[in-house]
Image 1 (tube, rainbow, N blue to C red):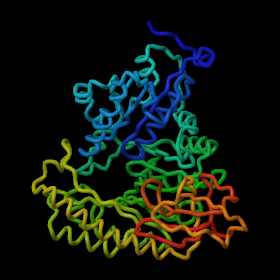
Image 2 (image 1 turned 60 degrees about the vertical axis):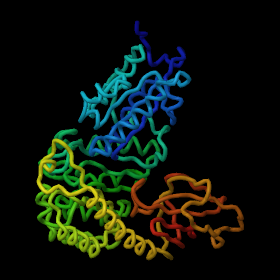
Image 3 (image 1 turned 90 degrees about the vertical axis):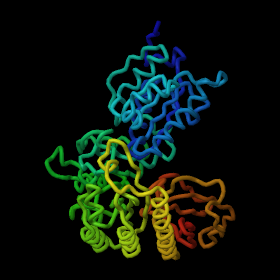
Amino acid sequence: MKKNVDTNACGDLGISFSVYLLTLGCDKNRVDGEVMLGRLAETGVFVPVNYPAGAEVIIVNTCGFIREATQESIDTILEMASYKADPSAPCRVLIVTGCMSERYREETKSELPEADAVLGVRDGDTIVEVVSGLLGVEIATAGTDPNHSRAAISQYVHNRHIAHIKISDGCDNACAYCTIPGIRGPYVSRTMEDILAECQLLLDASAREFVLVAQDTALYGIDLYDKPRLHELIRAIAALPGKPWVRLMYAYPEHVTPEIIQAIADLPNVCKYIDMPIQHSETEVLRRMGRKSTKEGLIDIVNTLREKIPDIAIRTTIMVGFPGETVEDFRGLYNFVKDIQFDRLGVFPYSREEGTPAATFPRQVKEEVKHTRRDRLMLLQQKLHQEKQQSKIGQTMDVIIDEEANTPEGGFSYPPPLDNANGDEHFKHYTGRTQHDAYEVDAVVHITAPASRLIQAGDIIKVKINNADEYDLQGVLAKQ
C-alpha cells in the first residue's frame, strides 16, 4: 500500500530520499536534467546528492544522437545498475530517460531490465509521479513551473554562475545525417517572456553567465512570431540587472542575420563569441547533407562577423567522411580550414545512423579514412589554435572565475604576481575563461592571485596573460 505524503510536513515526518542524476550528451540535455532534478527537489522529499553510491534513486539522462553516444549511455546504465544490485548500497530505483530511451524506447525496456522505468524526452513533467510510485509513496504536488524548478536546485549545481538557457526544442532543418527531428520533434520556441522570467530567477540564484542553446538558436521565434527574434532576445537578456554575460551557441550560419551580428557587436556584456556549426566547406557535400549553405556563403558570413566584430571568436564543428566525400572534397575542406583559421574547432567522423537518409546513400566512406581525415584536421587546428593563444601573451583580459584550483594546473610554472601582491606572500590559484571560451568546451585560463584578494566563482576580473600552451592560457591578477 502506498503512503500519502504531505510535502509540507515531510520534514516533521522525517521522510526524504536521496537522488543522483547523471546527464550525458549536449547542453540541451543538461537543461532537461536540471528541470527534472528541480521538480524532485521542490517537493522537499527528494534531496539531490553528488555521488551515485549514496543515492536511493539514480536517474540516467541518456544521449542517443549517434552510435557512440548510445553505447556510452548503455555502459553508464549498466554501471549505475551495479549500485542497485549491491546490497550494501542504498539504491532502490534506477530510471532511464533522455534521447536514447526516446529513440529506442522498446529496445531499452526489453534489453535493459535493470531499469525500473524508461522515460522519453517529453516525460520530464512526470518524474515526481514516476519516482514516488516506484518508492511506494504518494506525493501530492501542484503543477510546477520548470523555471522555478531550475532555480530550486541552484544550491546543488556545481558552478551555478553558469546557466544554460534552452530557448527552443526540436528542429525543422532535416539534415540528411541527423536523428534529432525524429527524437525531439519539430522546432518549438519558448516565449520571450518565459525565457526572461527564467533568467531573472537564475540571476537571483547566482547566475552570472547565460549560455543560449537550441538545435538552431538563430531561428529562435520564427514559429511564434513569424520571424526570427534572436537579436531581440539577446538584447533583452543583456539588459537584465547585473549585466550578465550572454553567450550564443549552435547558430546555423545560413540563419545568422545582420541583426544578430549587430546585437553581439553593440553590447559589451554579450560575449564576442559565436558557435556556428558549418559541418563542411564544399558546396556539393553541403547539398548532399541537406544544408543550405554554400562555400561562398560561409566565407561571406565569416568575413562579415570579423569585419563587424573584430575581436570575435568563431567556433565551428566539421564532419568528415560523409558519404561520397572524395579526396578532392577533403582537400578543399582542409585548405578552407587553413585559410579561414577558426578560433575554435571540433571535428567528428560521420556516423551512419539508421532512419536517416544518409544511411542509405552510396559511397559510404571507410572508418579508417574518416578517422585519418579527422586527425589531420585536428593537427592543423592545434597548430592554428596555439598560434592564436600565443598572440594573447601580454594582453590584459576580462576573465570569469569558474572555480578555485587546489593546485596549479596545465603544466605551467606559476610565478607569484609580485606586482599585485601588496606585500602578501601567499597566493591562490583559480581557473576561469575569457569571453572567447565556452564552459567545458573551449580553453581555460589558469590564474594566480594574492590570497588577500577575495575572489569567488562568477566574479569577472582583469587578468594579465603571461603564458600559453597549445590550448590554455595562464595569467596573474592585473592591477584593478
